[in-house]
Length: 287
Image 1 (cartoon, rainbow, N blue to C red):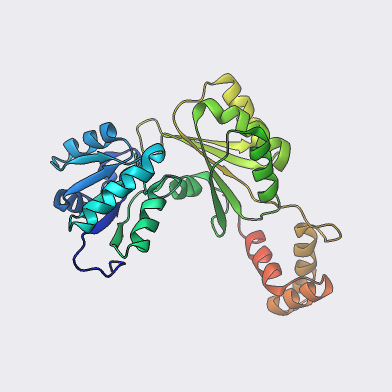
Image 2: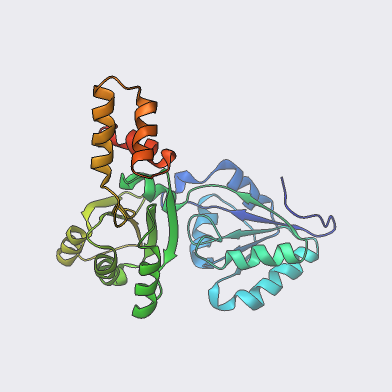
């Protein structure tokens, strides 16, 4: 379904492209790029390589962070003139930590039809590769260059129990890992690089172990950092292991599992849903 309603204007196609391996390009994405009048690209040189690989001959225009206002107006004019435009980023899904989101809002404000052609996304690929919990996660994008801003961002997400996902450049990796260890503690994490490419690599371990590794081995390529959520029990609350032990004692005495969970939740003044979720995770073997 295409979002928008002005039948006289063209359509903006937000097209996901491979994050590394060209074979991850979808048939629908190829057909879409062949059919449009213009491709708006974050980096025209990289996108030209992609188009040449799939023998796509379509005019290109640049659309990137520092020129998003004037280039957005140009793309909007093309759409209002009835032209169909495809938006692509350097890799993965446009509008995820790049200026594509501004173009989407511009289309909404001007009632321009748009749709998304899905495909590879680096942060979901890294999340699964990390081996950390996937039932709840928060994508945080890039941390700011200013140290005070980075530390404030990390302090804000420190209580979050969900798995945290960040993007980072290689020359900033060690600095960011050190800030994470300082603020979040020595949590489990995974540093993922060159995803879907020949030299794909995932380094898993505590943040201190990742720091030691990349102190010995120079970081190369763009990174996705996946960090364990907060597992500390709030002040006055028993550790999860104690809660699970209580349930096990009741069930070993013959109590029904659901009844035991309900009882333990009540005894510890906890939501039954949280106790049930903890019990499910605790009863599953570690990968």
